[in-house]
Image 1: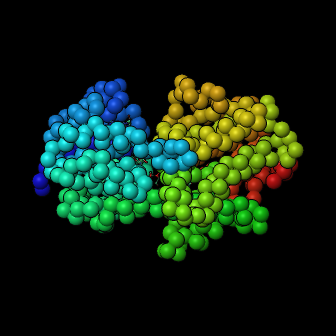
Image 2: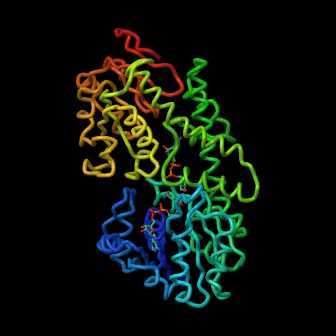
Image 3: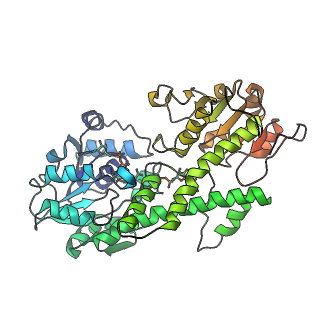
Length: 444
Ligand SMILES: NC(=O)c1ccc[n+]([C@@H]2O[C@H](COP(=O)([O-])OP(=O)(O)OC[C@H]3O[C@@H](n4cnc5c(N)ncnc54)[C@H](O)[C@@H]3O)[C@@H](O)[C@H]2O)c1
Ligand SMILES: O=c1ccn([C@@H]2O[C@H](COP(=O)(O)OP(=O)(O)O[C@H]3O[C@H](CO)[C@@H](O)[C@H](O)[C@H]3O)[C@@H](O)[C@H]2O)c(=O)[nH]1
């Protein structure tokens, strides 16, 4: 296999994973970031994001001399055959993707790219960005390729090395094939297409996943009203291979650094061409309502239909946007906590991936360093993130510490029978509350 010299710009979830994995496949990779502290830490093999296997790959790459970190894109690209852009594309004004970081890197490296170099966009960007980047570069010898990334946080390395598919789009088929060749060893189905289609695949996939989740969350609400059980309904749906069992778990709303911004960005793309994407709008509206519905459910379970949350102490289990990550970006758990706080609840929380010193959270919750402390004196417990260790808690001990007898499980993650035996009532999603036989029935 030909060993490419690769530059990766941006060393976040996508860039660091791309750099470390490509180096593990035998390429020489130089990664750049604007964050000097991050570059220093990574150069010492210190990885601050929680991703299984990533720190090991970074250290292996550093030790083998196949992976390096430098400050600033300009210092990474001079010898590169292929340059990957992995910089943020956050939600900008009106919901559209903010391309400032992409454009600033392009400006920075435009005149430094070696002749014949391929510039690959891995960031999630709206249709037309490859064309715009090619114009900005203004060099016919440099090809621009769109190669969206589909990894999930918490399993980034696994997903990168075992992709369901590779999507590569470009005006020049030769440039697209050069990029596809980098992944040849992974043996994944590869879609070679034009740049606009490749760019749209990414949004189409994320927005479909978001729609699937909003549908499931709505179905869970319907289950509660008609007396059905969402677990059985989704299991029954999921055996249909056209639907599948994955991504059918109801929750407090979908979040994270991607689905919320990508749904908004696609709505903007649609609007810009005069297409009223009502289905996708319903998906995002339904997700906003889901967070409010969780607050109503929690209030109902903990203080009854007419009670106020003002001054009520609640213990929260989990704050990250899903289990397996320490990422808080657009976390539904944090959104629900914020709404509870706005209603005057006194919140304490435990999350295995967060440090009690996480300063950005102090306005909303007081972080404690173990789960039992969260139960102490609380009117109710609310599980917001599905960390496996919450299942293994000593629920008898939790029950003794709690002032109230209520657990609201917004992920259907806990075993209602275990809680029931501990004398706790369990309020899940898309089913009826499970109340211990001996206790007075709390309002449903
Ligand atoms: N996080 C995911 O799971 C995921 C998955 C697929 C695609 N994406 C997309 O990939 C892109 C990157 O996402 P991320 O989660 O890795 O972001 P991130 O915020 O974790 O990392 C981005 C990195 O880029 C650096 N950066 C910013 N401007 C720079 C510049 N001018 N030069 C060099 N470095 C710069 C930042 O300092 C940061 O380290 C986004 O478009 C995102 O939508 C993310
Ligand atoms: O059955 C499910 C599955 C997920 N979620 C929630 O949905 C959100 C997103 O989860 P997930 O997709 O696992 O997170 P990300 O790591 O943000 O990954 C998504 O966003 C990435 C960035 O674009 C894409 O690369 C991935 O393919 C896409 O799954 C989280 O709040 C989850 O808790 C549920 O509520 N129920």
